[in-house]
Amino acid sequence: MSISSFIQEYGLLALIVGTIFEGEGVVLVAGLAIRQGLLPPVGALLAALLGTVISDQFCFYTGRLMGGTVLRRFPGMQGRFDAVRARVENHQTAIIFSFQYFPGLSMIVPFTLGMTRLLALRFLVLDVLSAGLWSGTLLLVGYLFGVSIQPLLEKFHEYSGWLLAGLACLILLLFHWRASRAKVKEGGL
Image (cartoon, rainbow, N blue to C red; front, side, top):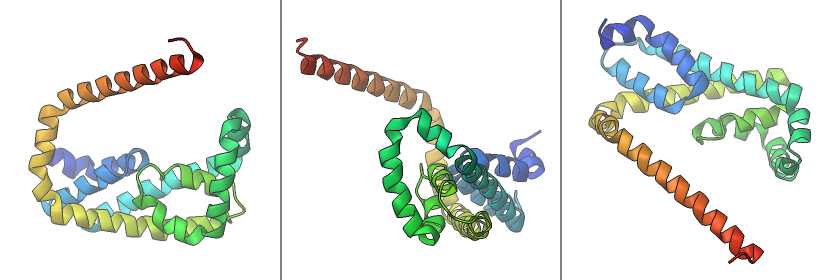
């Protein structure tokens, strides 16, 4: 089975699963697949929307049902959470429509919203609208610019092993530096 036939056969399902776990990159690649005629545009939009909403709702209800338990287990998070919650409660609609566009917030914002007084039905409606807008935007970007970044993606795969090794070394150096700073502060050196 070729990659093209795999995408045509399982692409929409992969897009749903991909948006549940990753998001941006999967939707951008789906835009490129639409441009190449491998995925239907409406099907891709609905699949990206569905996966995004499933992920957001899971995080929202996790916050609603288990948020207090998480904060009790990690008491150091309480102060930061209270500050975030105050902002979230005052700007719910704007936050729901914008958090998808900021990588790294797609899990914490719905989790935090789940711990507020926000009505679940209101979150669902706004989330569907927001996820539709986000999915459509990224599919369009992938459609319009996917061809121009395809050579870059191929180069990334060619050098990904070296990039990961370099990142691992950087992380190890950072840990070593922080440990040596801690020793100096304790008067060890």
